[in-house]
Image 1 (cartoon, rainbow, N blue to C red):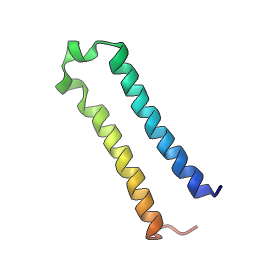
Image 2: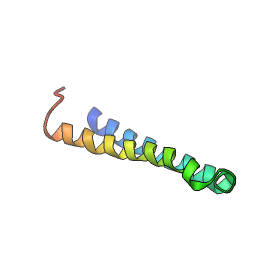
Image 3: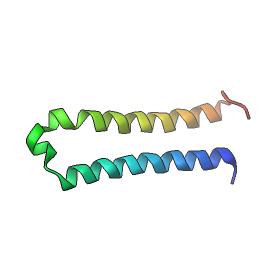
Length: 69
């Protein structure tokens, strides 16, 4: 396995771990009921969106050879 492939896999694993962490938080606590969805949800959604964008952009940069090893 090449180094860039391993990095991509670990990047995706870290995004999945972040999603699991937020899911666990919302499933095991009643934080949404206490603070409201408008207060609690935007930040986790932003973090996950930035992670998805970063993975997409890293793949695009690899295809266009912005960074050469």
